[in-house]
Length: 272
Image 1 (tube, one colour):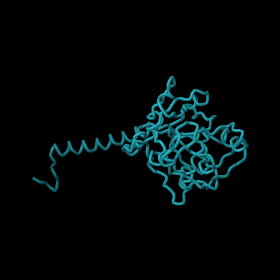
Image 2: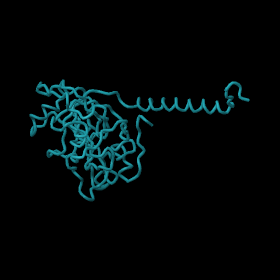
Image 3: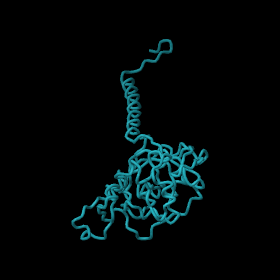
């Protein structure tokens, strides 16, 4: 009976409603927890490489050819060897974004960058494949200017691939202030930076180039290689005798190696 417009609901209805509310609440907690597993946001600085004779396919990490269909594709980074982020960085991934802040370079020169970014809220993920070395005699002036972890670099100077850089900011500036944090390599940002139409021509690997799962990776034993967690690849198992092999899964982390096989990848995000 309906008295004065009141509606009487069954106990099962209320149980369903309570379950629904708790589900939403727990989903919110899961989302927050998922976001909390990411590293904290830090301040850095970035330049770019990849279309200037410095190939993303010949990085010090020894991963070799990068492939657009193995996430995050050509979005890669070379980390300063004086940055606190450098140790065991090979294969790690960072979420990065541009910030409209000015800074100084390694010579103390002020760099005005108040309009360098397209959209400060947009980010993307990059994989560490290379080093930005402080000491590099054949390019000494530029490397000292950017790669020696001066005060303007924040906690990391990184050389972004030109394809990552131009999704975040205006390439004509040549350098940008960066925000970054470590994330799983299958992480998909909540607000991803879009691909641009007039991008720099891609540096596509040659036809038949070996994918990561087809390679045999061996641990480098020189001091710098050990420090960065770098590898090199050999052609067959006999060349890897008496050496420490490194599984491709360790270099293409968080399931991204699946893409090397053409298998689907489940992405993580703060919205899941």
